[in-house]
Length: 410
Image 1: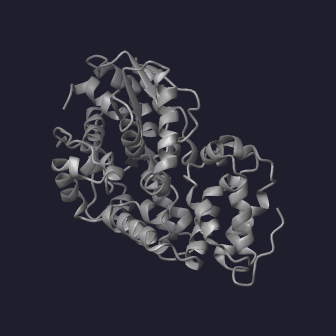
Image 2: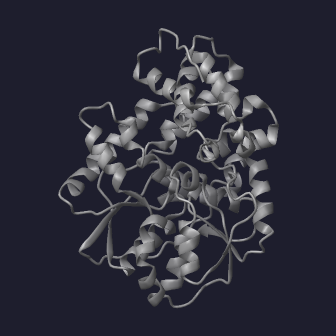
Image 3: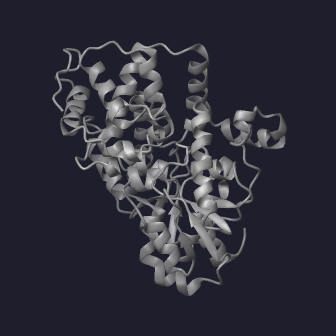
């Protein structure tokens, strides 16, 4: 796609990256067939191809409008289009550029500004956990659009204290410890069972994804640098062999730290090293499959439906690892129709775009129910909460199921 950037962007790192991405786009339209919002709305401007043209026009000098902003907002950033694209267009990176440029030029309504500020600052605040505990106690009084996000309080069980020669970092993240703490505890127990010691670095926190996708790139970079600083001493001296993540949204961004910090002379090399060490737990555990099989006490369920998170199968490019591991451990795992399609969670999307989010959730749940599962499993807290809000079938992280088969319920 031929592009003529305006003088404002020509020759800048942002402009050069956008131009390189746009150059690969051949306008074929394969992406529209897998785009959730295009499937729902049928509007070219609400599909990847249409959004690419809108961003291209802005970078070439056109003045963005509120309509431009709305069409970009409706994108889930699921990146299913990237998986389908035969030309390798890095749509997610182009969208980040486009959103930042449009938001700098188009003022949002006051209500939207408040909502986005609340999500950026609230989800990453130390006050988030006590706020969630209060919300769990007063759940009937929580505003309807947020009630589904306040899960009932969950028991997490004890974390292992044993030391092992093999060590990895795990990232607690910002919302998971408060909302569904058993995911992290289960990951720690499973790692311990195969002789790997999970470490949590002092000072590590939000991966930066919340700020990145809410048009706060400088805040996202600060989050990334803070985590790199927290991890680097143990990475540099070889103490840890990997950074294992059980929230695939965090994993998707940590694997891109090297890209986001490539122009920072103080962090570029370290960021790239961190990205090469990042592994989703579904990537890291298969090496221990024979050991896990020998340790299993039983299988807690007979039939599972697995929803692969977009951040795992599209953003990270890891497809099939979790379900294959579960099958290797003796579980009957079934994928629903349209398993490539987003469930509508997409981080903060379900709060900011509740109507579209709910339509996608219901469509996903219908396909999952067709497999007649005893439980639904996924690999990301956002997907788990989103799906559980619309069904009575238990929904959990697949690592919790492995932990349960090893140790029983927490």
